[in-house]
Length: 167
Image (cartoon, rainbow, N blue to C red):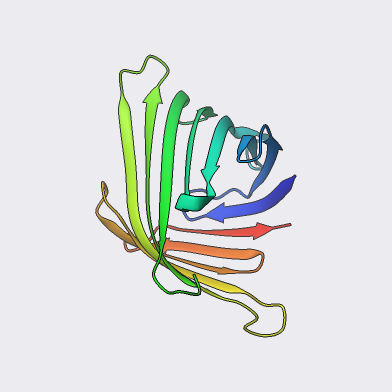
């Protein structure tokens, strides 16, 4: 199980996030995850999805259901495909999209992004760094992610930010 501590500018509470991937087949797994809001002392997110990877295409797709304290119950579908830019695979161009539907499939929200990611391994000893620069298509917002081993910082041009520490 992967657990992490998360904090963002949109919430004054520390959130504890847990995720488990249960293999169903060689490239298919069930992913369940949840989040506990420490300020409220209650779950702020519970989700389950089935995801399939297509390693030859550098792609993945998934469908699932999610409950969060703001939008309540919703269904979602997502897909992602990466294209190596360099022969060593350290620089990649990725396109990804999501659609979220309410429980009656009447209201739909879309997310989509295009991003470049650069991975640099063994910067100092065992330290790996990944930098992503992307553009969220529907909100028309550029964003940045910097990840160093267990730490991740996300920020966008509107001042939204979040920090994650993987335990």
